Image (cartoon, rainbow, N blue to C red; front, side, top):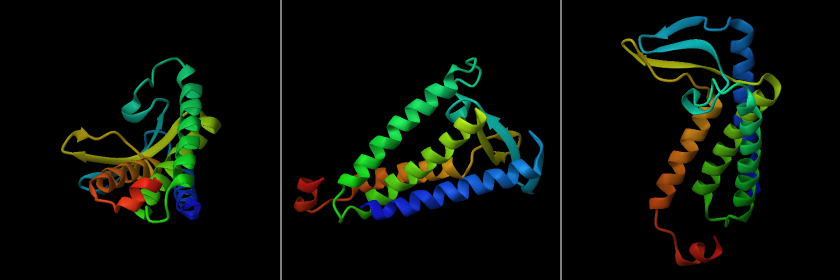
Length: 159
């Protein structure tokens, strides 16, 4: 099932490339209106999802690097142990792994994660995010969907 690591690699490349383009083209907090509900806005997130622990004083950078590294190793092992029939699960894990690595690269090099996708309704903005975050969310959603799909008895024994 390691053949799905190519999907992780694709997520990492697209994530890092998009962050580089935005960071090279925008100043911090600069916004470009794209649609009535969507902006491109350069933001730096020193915290986790929804800026959790963003104001923690700096220790969170290495905490999140360590946590993400442990989670990435666990995801790699999980992917390696999957049966060949567990394709949806493999895709889901690969998306999550690629997203996690994409964001940890930012944390290591910059101390923050580059976010730039800004969706909103009226004056209410959802937390800005990036391609890595999107891959993680899609992967998590696919894992949930996969958990509801009945598996043949042989798959259950090998997993």
